[in-house]
Image (cartoon, rainbow, N blue to C red):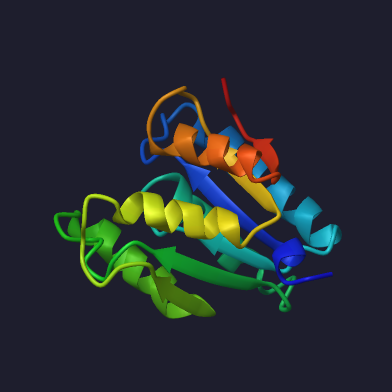
Length: 159
């Protein structure tokens, strides 16, 4: 297996309705466990609020049981948390410190840096786990891009 064949990326919305969260958390953990069972070892997340944070927390939470898995953060720019609430920025910093690898796709924020991050995640993965409830926006774009690149796309709590 190549590294790409052992890699999964995540994409999803920043806002998760509180009523969807418990089922999504459970579905996400079960999906990650199944992927680990299939030989997936590397998990790439984009560091955004919402689903990206939840995915990173899930991978880190499973490290005790599966010490061979790795969290790779692919971040759009070093100042991604500018304007975030203090608690969200603190959790981001905790996740970044715990990640096994951090990659920045730009030196500073630019209009295209989020799309560059999303394409990087897809281009280095064989599976994309997505929380996508709309047909428009960055998550829908990334899911469509993943499909066009031939990735297996696993939709959680989707339309």
